[in-house]
Structure formats: C-alpha cells, structure tokens
Image (cartoon, rainbow over all chains, first blue to last red; front, side):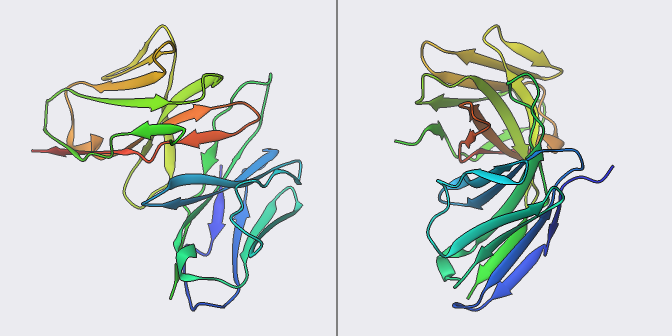
Length: 116
Length: 109
C-alpha cells in the first residue's frame, strides 16, 4: 500500500519565483496536514484539512503561502513569491480519526526547498 | 517559551550504553504524548506512545510525569541503528501535534 506521496522531492528556485508543492495522502485518510521543518524552529504545523476543507491555517506564516485541497487525493501548498527564508523541508502527513482520540499521522518523504 | 522543549544534544554514546532523553511541555491540557524518530533526511515516524503508567517496547521505555509536565525516553543496550533524532510530540486535541525540535543521538562502535 502506497504511503503519502510528495512531489517534487527537491526544489531549487530563485527568490521571487512561485513554488508549488504537491501531496497525495493515503487513500481513505480524511485528514491532511502540511508541516515545515527548519533547524531553528523544528517541525511546525502550517495548515490542516478535514474532508478537503481547511480547518486551521493559523500556522501559515503569511499571505505568500496558500494551500488547497481540491479533492480527497490531492493537495497543494503554494508560495508566491518565494523568499530565501522559506528554505526548509516541507512535509505532508495524513491520518483518519476514530473515537475522537489521536490516530497516528503518516508523513510523506518531504520536499526539500531551497530558495536562492 | 516553546510549547515542547528538548535538549538538542547530540548525545554521543557507545554501543551497549543506556541513554535517556527528557522533554518538557507547557500546556497542562495536553492529552497525549509520543516519541517520534527521524533519521537523517527522512520523515518522522512514530516510535511509541507515552502513557502515565509507563510503557516499554523492547529496549525502549517511555514515561510521563503529568505533575511535572515532562516526558522521558530510555534506550537500553544502544545499537548503531538507534542513531537518529528523537522528537518529543504532544497532542493538544483538535488533531494538532506539537513537536519538539528533537534530540540527536549518535551511537558509536
């Protein structure tokens, strides 16, 4: 069974360019999360969706960041315009919830973004 | 103050050693607690959940102290393959996980 799929795995771009990161969650999972990981700040939740609807985007750093989930099997995180401080590893994770308790989130392999 | 704090390490230990990591959290309403493992340039993966009564999984023992708001992970008989970053993770409800910045462990021959 395929896990969470992310693309591209690596992205190098120049400041000011638009960057789009993609994620395919595990089939049947109804929660999708976008995280960003840096050495200084660790792993931070940016936004999460439930049944394709954004539930909490309080972690999105600023208006340059946007995320969409047009259907249950696809989500994008877009940065426009990109800045060098956006350089980080971006992870997508998915899960399904039962009984109101925590269920393990499964992470994709991440996209390593470098903005020059 | 960060919600979840960990000593970044690195902890350098020889094979066969016992090593312990601690983590503190600030939100007393936190509901569940976990240790995740992250290998270099890989994604985080769940290592184990942490229960108030303490729990073991082979060479790994996790403990939770709610009164002092800290979590611990003990690794016995360290293996080279245990080298990784260990993330302390707190679930605050509403499906949100809060991650510590991780403690790096290096096990040497």
